[in-house]
Amino acid sequence: MSIILALAIQISFLFGVPAQSIPAVLVSHEKSPYYSIYDPKKDIIVVFGEDNLKSGILAHELAHSIINKTMGSVPSKTQEILAGYAEYEMNKAFGNVVLSMEEINRR
Image 1 (tube, helix red, strand yellow):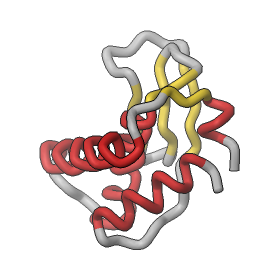
Image 2 (cartoon, rainbow, N blue to C red):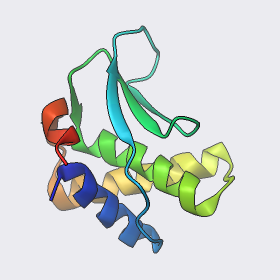
Image 3 (tube, rainbow, N blue to C red):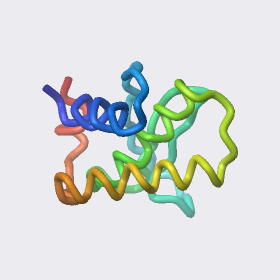
């Protein structure tokens, strides 16, 4: 099972919602004030400037994807609280390890 799928299943279970499609994770070398973002229009997670990502940040962005697909329009502050909770729980359970893009996108 891939890392991204395992995290998505754990986060879906955490929120009590069914697992949905898994977004692609892409690297962008554009300048950004963010380390990563989830783009709901394209259903992708964009990582800025790095070819790796900490598992907690991946969990945070996956949570945004799951919230968007299962709960619809949720205020941004509420989304950040829920995504932060998912990041915290995944860090607590698995540690905050650095994952390569190859590891993340292995399906």
